[in-house]
Amino acid sequence: MAEKTPRKFFEPLAAGAPAPYRELPVRLERMIHFVPPHVEKLRARAGELAREVDVVLGNLEDAVPLEAKEAARAGFIQMAQATDFGSTGLWTRINALNSPWVLDDIIQIVGTVGAKLDVIMLPKVEGPWDVHYLDQLLAQLEARHLIGKPIMIHAILETAEGVKNVDAIATASPRMHGMSLGPADLAASRAMKTTRVGGGHPEYKVLADVAGDAPRTAYQQDLWHYTVAKMVDACASAGIKPFYGPFGDFSDAAACEAQFRNAFLMGCAGAWTLHPSQIAIAKRVFSPDPQEVVFARRILEAMPNGAGAVMLEGKMQDDATWKQAKVMVDLARQVAAQDPDFAAKTGL
Ligand code: GLV
Ligand code: MG
Image (cartoon, rainbow, N blue to C red; front, side):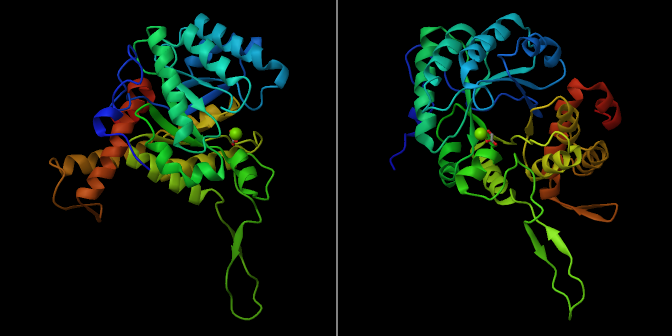
């Protein structure tokens, strides 16, 4: 497939639209907290919520009843206008591109609160063509409404075709912020035999080999490992951020934490929080472990120019562990800047 030249890639797609970012703005996005904006009581708490989470997202897509689609859109606009979000991100998840609501979602939201909006989450992205459509439309609307900074696009990876095209989606536009794994729609799209929103399945396992007829231990495997790994590689190589999406069993905090932690260890920047109880879990999991940060700082200090090899507590350190330590300490600095407790624990 023909691709744009490097120069064209970074040109605004409409006269008067802001220039696309060349690097992602540096932001802590450990949890993307979903708010149903048609519910007045929850909308009214957005200011309070903004002090607690890294990103507030007004959800217009799935989980919003069909008869509330217009109310959710109007509620999101009202919430965005009425709330001071400070340094907290403001996102919306619009309806899918093949739905009857999405054109009004985009036109009305960008037309009224576009200057306040950081990211549009686009569901059910199948390939780069979906990103190109929204990219062009956003540039036209940014130009029309004199919006000074580009609104970014975050794709949900939740169809088999999307997973197949994940690399092309990640590099479709400089407007790409990142992507989230959507395990519920993806399971349906792939005909996986589950009824859950994320998490494992007790029947997805391997049986240990044993001698004779000794009892055999079953080891549960991670259903999402392949997809998360594929998404992380696509995002990291494109310079954008991968996220784990929803975890639907609000009563199982331990499993939610395990799913989030696997995503964090594999390279994800955050996860969705659908229930208030998940906020503390995401905050804990997607902030690096203070003990590890202290050790990572020792690696950086022991190798001031990042080269050579030293031993610390019997463990070999070289250029590659120095880079790992730097990833950890860079993230820790962002957390420390907003959390005095964490700053004290890590000496940052
Ligand atoms: C999220 O949208 C999902 O389908 O899991
Ligand atoms: Mg979905």
